[in-house]
Image (cartoon, rainbow, N blue to C red; front, side, top):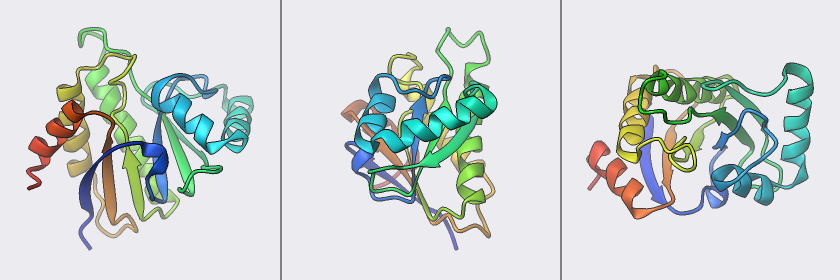
Length: 174
């Protein structure tokens, strides 16, 4: 079965998917933007699960991902990944961002997720250029070996029109 890729404009905390991806910070304790919205909407169960991960491994490194319950969200899981802060492309930001997508997909496959929703990782306060981030996201996902997995839908959730336009152009969706 071929994995379907779709684009949605709106709030990732309202998406019906088995897993949603959180553009987290390394502390896993919540923050602003997508991270804060997911923690607020999901409730204390997400924070408690993140605190347990911190106690076990001390947070999450840039480019890595961890999985928790989704608490009160309409998803089963939240996959927290830490994107790179944009520093002009001089600090391996592109490779680290691609790692966020690969590691999130690996966790989704490992947990037999059938649908996963991604926000624009690192495009908010981490200042990664939106067009470049979208190109990395689409390319990384299209290269990921998804055949023979339960994953049948990948949703790119865009909070703004600009991001939606970039994904729409990259995926050639009418």
